[in-house]
Amino acid sequence: MILSGKGVRGDLRDFWNKRNRSPTIWDRRESMVTVEDAKKVAQHLVKTMDPVCVIVFGSVAKTGKGEDIDLLIVTEDKEKDLKTIDSEVHKLLKPFYGDFAIDPFVVPRLVLRKHFLQGSPFLRLVQREGRCLYMKDSIDQWFRQAREDMAMAECLFNNKYYRGACYHSQQAIEKGMKGVLIKKGWELEKVHSIRLLTSIAQRYGISSVMQEEDMDFIDSIYRGRYPAEEGLLPIGEPTMEDAMRAVKIASDVIRKLL
Image (cartoon, rainbow, N blue to C red; front, side, top):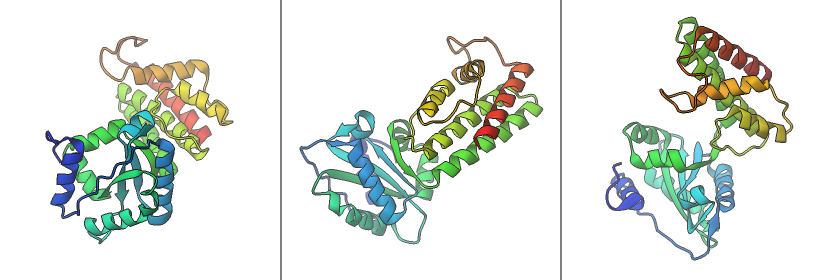
């Protein structure tokens, strides 16, 4: 999908109509809806249709309120055509239409992947500004990715790719901590600081799994992921000792968390 002068909604309408989808009814209400309303809708969809993922985007995602709820609903790749799935979703959302307007965009997983890889500006926008309300098996995915990053960090270190080893060590810690927090009921936020995640974890009754100086060291890795990053200390490429320290910290954290 390529965005044109019609804007996101116009392009989306053209995009889905090309796939023989019936046009969406662009309903509007004067009352404002909130992210809490969006969560209720997502919970209803989870119970009634078992989606892969539900993402709210638009003003509700950015500011917490808006005129309507824009939802991207990702489904499994079933034999049903998109028009049939879309019709079913509209029926499932019928109980909410009397309270507020909902603009649902339904897409099978493989179709989503195809257009994302083709560089869809709309999907990139959703990725940057959207808010995930539900993801199927999300906790298992966080833990699996944490272990994969840990394995990648060790592999890169053994092959003397020290910057990559540091980066994947940081990612292993971040993803492991987020998985544990989500399991405790935390709502995913765009947080990358290990120190901040540790502070959030303590509010959920989770004891710190890192020393203070180790948090600062790991956070410096994320801040310095690009060349010439301002404020990065220490300056320069990570040494073998830096990478060894990062891998050891991550290994200890993953062992304690998972």
